[in-house]
Length: 323
Image (cartoon, rainbow, N blue to C red; front, side, top):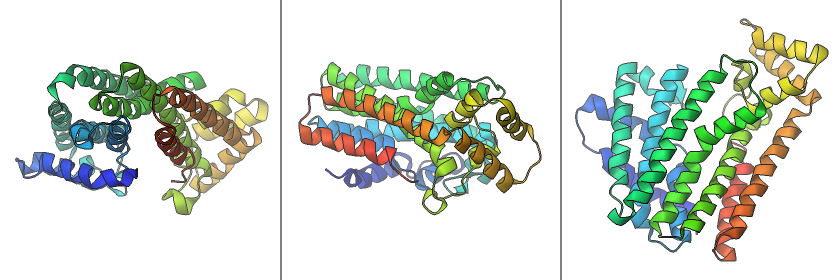
């Protein structure tokens, strides 16, 4: 099984959902944001889970694409909240058009995600919508926590993990569970693959945090240190604040409070503080702990060894990625 084989089906289905729809200025931003790529992790996870549990991939394609439409809706609104200029190397919708357009197009995407989800087999809709509804609520909760953290300097590592579970991990986990439901897997297997997804999602976000500091610029695809420059409350920064003391804590706090600074100087100085506290290693150990939890759930699934290996390889590719 090669997950890349799912991509043509995912892409063609996404195009068909919004193709030719009017008014142009409502739907063109949607077509634009869907056309500029992304890893398509969520629909791929859904199709893969359906496939692994013996279902027909075509039976899961609409729920899978509903997840991708929903994910991209959250990006439209997140970019407005963050006042982000770029997304995947292209101008964000609210910059290319305007904020009102981005809000309205996002609203349509949310509604459309539900409409597309409802194209699944009707007998499965109560289960599918239960998972989807809960996930959409939790993602909003995660976004609110993330925004709350911006004005707090006392965020704990546990609070951060709880936030990324909601903001990132639950949607990856829901994708796997929805794929399992489409294949009519047992409720036990659907719950286990959800737990697998939660822990892979946590490891995935922690890897993102780590890459922003320790990634290879050529492979990472953008300048490292972006999180450091904007004082983003990542696992690395929070852990550094918790573990530092004396002059080290004073120096880190001063860098966080500076409104004017040389970018390269700040990245170099804060990274040096992280290194002195062994923060990179601590973050890697945390990643690995979630990877091990994912494997525990994986081992309990009623799948053959070769199918479990597929899931394991996916988890490893996310954990050991360089971009």
